[in-house]
Length: 509
Ligand SMILES: NC(=O)C1=CN([C@@H]2O[C@H](COP(=O)(O)OP(=O)(O)OC[C@H]3O[C@@H](n4cnc5c(N)ncnc54)[C@H](O)[C@@H]3O)[C@@H](O)[C@H]2O)[C@H](O)CC1
Ligand SMILES: [K+]
View 1: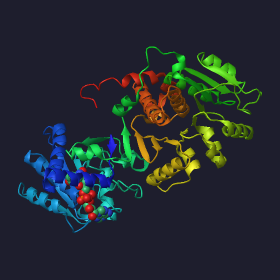
View 2 (view 1 turned 135 degrees about the vertical axis):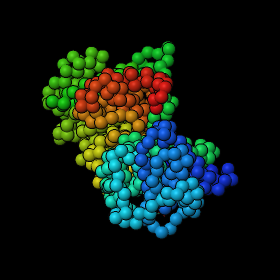
View 3 (view 1 turned 135 degrees about the horizontal axis):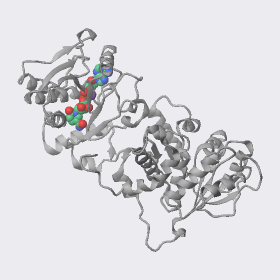
View 4 (view 1 turned 180 degrees about the vertical axis):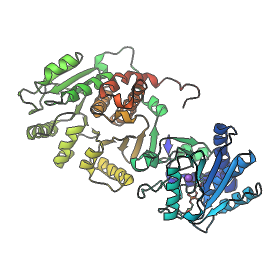
């Protein structure tokens, strides 16, 4: 699904008004009308006290349209205008006139914290204070209102975006409404998926407000959300007349003393992702461990007898190499890694200590083959690209890094974002149970296994991230977040592939 930027939403707005030759108030009526229907379907006339907080721009105007529709359907509604400015948008004023024509309970104007109403737990809050037009932090007293809403315990429906959240930058934390659900017009907003704002957004829905199809179909967005529809299109079916050679040979370079589990997990994930052959390269001590844990995996070892890798030489011609899990960053390993990179031409997936070694000796970055996949978690990413001030700057820096070193950067997080050639592929699977040791090793194995089969590195990174998260989601249906382990994620990789072709159950999104 395309994730439109703020400018693109305004352009889509304009394109719709032009294509349909309608005044802009019609679009507000449509957006507010659909938002009302969304609420009405769920409320079914329940006698709940609805408090609608409106700003003075078009988001506020949407709130007034929602209020009028609710009043027309006999809901108990109180409307407030949060007077953070004396200006009013044209459509807001029109929506206000229409509301005043329907009720004697005209909106109450709030000018300071003294004017705030009580908010009860049982109330339903409709948040229309700011939409995508927010361009600076809200005034202190308006932020106090957001805090009051947040601590009320009431159900909060934010219209388009949670008020106080900017869609194209990050304001200081804790200044936004924390919604129960966001009903976003036409497109989810990128900030929903970034940790600083996204941590407050647990539920969101997109409301199709009928913006111009031609515009929506042709617009190129920097960001897109990867869900089942997108992932399904990436899947490459197995061929009838195929053999293990068809699906490639993957090499996993991983493990050291006490961290052999990393080698086991990533090799196993590589197998389950469908690589034709998987070989693990590890220390001699690792041999019995891997051979016992995974009879399907071949093992090649360092000829030394140390607790960590001292040499990275093998007499194989793999199609792809996944390198890094559990390797450690001992000097000898670092030297072996450097020597390996100097001569290696095979596509790489680099993770964990592989990334740490790259960050320690940045000259090594230039030795990476084109389109290598790097899979850093936030701390590893910081070691590679330096500190960032906010989530948007992080993405800009990641983009610059990916361009400089010609690599696919998989920025792992609750919503992992794959960054490549100026595009952001935002993953929409996964859950907090996956924040557990070894989960990253599994992702490395999956991406490596997909590249072995012939998926290009970008697709492997995006699709692998999706499958990994989906496996975690399916696994957690059988257990608590707390009890989910990396090993269980591997066990559900097959189910994640099968799920690509399952229709959603009725009534379930
Ligand atoms: N295509 C669509 O999706 C449609 C969206 N609609 C709604 O319109 C808003 C955007 O409306 P806009 O008037 O541009 O902005 P806001 O209502 O978010 O903000 C109002 C106004 O306030 C000023 N401002 C910004 N920051 C501050 C601040 N901190 N303090 C004071 N004033 C501030 C600024 O001038 C803004 O313009 C969108 O989210 C949808 O809800 C349409 O109704 C239908 C089509
Ligand atoms: K809002």
